[in-house]
Structure formats: C-alpha cells, structure tokens
Length: 284
Image (cartoon, rainbow, N blue to C red; front, side, top):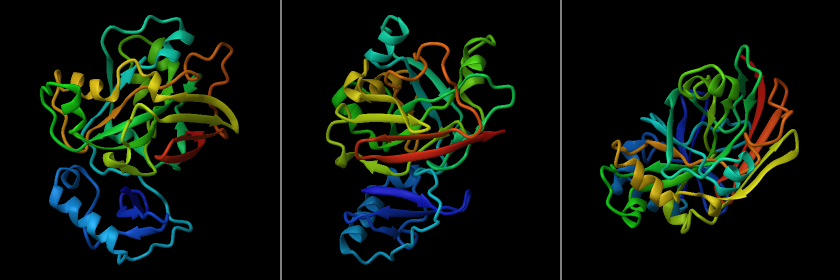
C-alpha cells in the first residue's frame, strides 16, 4: 500500500493512493498514520480490506497539500557515509561500522513544502536518501533476516544539511543537521510488501533541473537489514521511528567550488517506486 497524509500542516488526515493512482480518504477507517497504526496488524488489515473494496471516498488531489507520511515520529536515526560511491568520491575509507547521528523529529516537513536556508548559511547541501520506517519494536535484533521483519515500509527522505555548521563550527554534526525544515519526507509510506528488495532501488536528485545524484541502494556499504540490526544493538527502535540510510555520490563529495543551495533554488528527488519530491528554497 501507498499510505500518505494530506491537508494543512498540523491538520493532516490519513489517505492512500490506490492501485489505479486514485487518492482515497482513510479518515473513517483509521485516525492517522503513525507508529500506533503501523504496529497494529488488525488495523492495517482493515486498511487493506478497505483499499481492496474500492469503497473509500475519493479525494480531489488538486491543490491538496501532501504532508509527511508518518505522524508523531519518535526519532530519526541517520547513517553517514553509507555508499561505496560516496566514499570513493570523498576519498574516505568505508567505515568499519555504521556511522550514526540523529535528526530531531521536528525537522520533518512534507515532500513539497518550502525548505528554509538558515540565517548565516554558506553551505546548505542536498542528499537524497532511502528512509526506513519501523513497524515493530526492535531491540537487540539477532539477524539481518529478522531485522527486515521490523520494517513497516519505506519512503523518500531529503537529508538537507548545512556543511559549515556541521563540519567547521566545532562539536558534533548536530548544528548542521537539525535546522528548521531540514528533513522533507514522503510523499508516501510504501509498505514493505511492495519493496521486495530494498537494495535494488534507484535514487536521483536534481538541482534547478540539473541531475546531481543518480545512484542505487545496491551501493550501500551496510544494507538496510544490517542497519536495522546494528542500530537495535545500541538503542530501541519503536514503531514510527525513521532511519535515513545514507546518500549516494553527488552530494557532499561534489568538487569545489560547489554551488550550494540558495533561496530560489528548486530541488527535486525521487526513488524508484517510492514517489517524488519537489522543494523550493527560501531564506529563514
């Protein structure tokens, strides 16, 4: 299923995109798309039955805002330097273990919402990423095979970053990763049954119509299954948590002088089968 949330910010309602590409209202079936729903097999079953019945009300998509596909996200765990091609272009050694950092849940916005360039920014940067959404509590998962059983689905994520704040201002990466609007997510949460192999997805990103990233999750150093298993050894993952799994070449490794993002720029990004985003950038 392709689950999404539509409406004004803070007042989104649950919806789904059916097999014919028709937007349908889910608000009479479930209250929202969040961790509680993703952990409830009975509720998900009711959603599937309603989708298959064809009886759900049709929504007029014209002018309707698409919000983040998951509400009340607990935490966003991010994996750095997780693509072989990205490591090669930056001249970095592939890490022996996944590099973990965090983004605050309040950085999440809709896939087409405006992204704000922070005040004083000189190096606001782009990164298309595969997001993994957790559907079952994951604590000390023992194997990669078992790890995938904890995945509810997948989405497109834009891990926007400010590189000067992140790398040149001291301390951890947090200052460059948690600026307002720095994690557009969506348009859909595509349930795991529709993504039989998360290591066979193409990812692409354009800046002002110019292709900047064109990669595949097959280049990941640590596959989705290993990322979920590994992270669960250090923290508990709960339904509705999100993992951003890294970005392919063409992001921070682009040679200098790199044309970093400014107000007025337009970024578009997509992942095979997971939909497409478009953001206009403006000043904070």
